[in-house]
Length: 132
Image 1 (tube, one colour):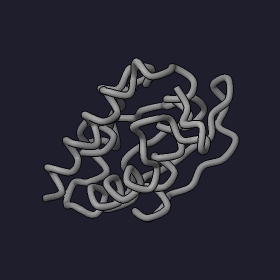
Image 2 (cartoon, helix red, strand yellow; image 1 turned 120 degrees about the vertical axis):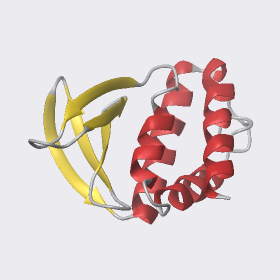
Image 3 (cartoon, one colour; image 1 turned 180 degrees about the vertical axis):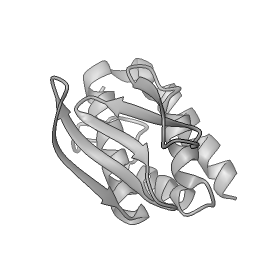
């Protein structure tokens, strides 16, 4: 379901989504919060990994061709993955990561249709509450 005035699906505001994700990433533990929240959206592939010798498990989520992992505090590692091969990987600050996650959710919504919109809106509501 696409808005006839543009490419935004009805009920989804990409700028609002980017702002909410950016605010959540700026919280202590924000990257873990965002990746953990994304793991509940249908169509997202979740991988749990161990980080380092004594590190706890790290959560990696993949939306379409984009993989997101918590990086240094406040940042996400974003990788472009095609058929299991990482083509590019960057550690991004909250503003860029928020916009990127919004783009990936927009693509997921266009791919899967309006049935995932309630899950995406729920994700945004949860992150909004967490960010205060």
